[in-house]
Length: 332
Image (cartoon, rainbow, N blue to C red):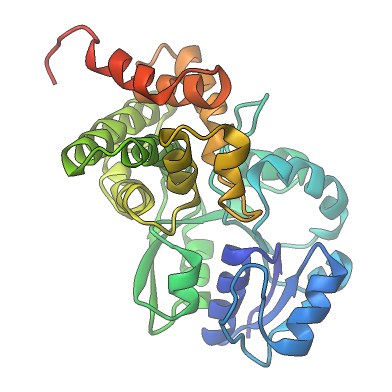
């Protein structure tokens, strides 16, 4: 029986801990705040991130990373992407042995422009073949409610990928393996940027034509960047690319789309992010790292440029639309 630790008791970390238990694992969920850990233990519910969702009685909960990681076969990292390196400074000495380290995070690190698996390897001193990524159209509340969903497990070690696939397969959660770590991670990061753009369109009152255009052109941006970084184009046509992109751009459950909607209605960033109730919209920070990567490799990503301009340079969403629509005409 797999022994797993999930570090991070936000919505996705909590939901993933639940499904690991449902798949037959022995699981410890580690919260950053002792008071939240105590509440989850006492009530069987995470009121801050998954209110109303009953968690398995066998799920252990702690605020002590050392206790959570002791003797684990599987370590799942579910913290905001921009805090990963700081957290790994504390956790790295505890990640010994041959445990598989799983990233649930969808972002690119500011400053280094590294993918989360690269940060895990560098800051956590974890061999590349021990790192896996779980990504796809996976809204935490729907999965915690046991609604059918599929995901991608990307790992350079096919045997680890297969073991992890078995460890998180449930009647409501179907994982597929994929060796393309680069494509899987880029898909998860860039889709958040596109969801901000779609949210802006919704906030401005635009309809389905606009959203469909942004999703399609956003997929093209994602694929162009992935190609130069060594990703497989087919990955972006699958769950880690198009699947996650459509879900995040279209669903009201998407925090990135929600922030974009606020900006589209004329709210400032503080007002727009307040609507996520303390949960992180990863695209707000990662959009800058994605654009840095694009500029480093001379990749044209106009939607990403527009999102960065609105989120960080004071551009109004209406001006972003004008800029995108007045670009030089070209073939598709």
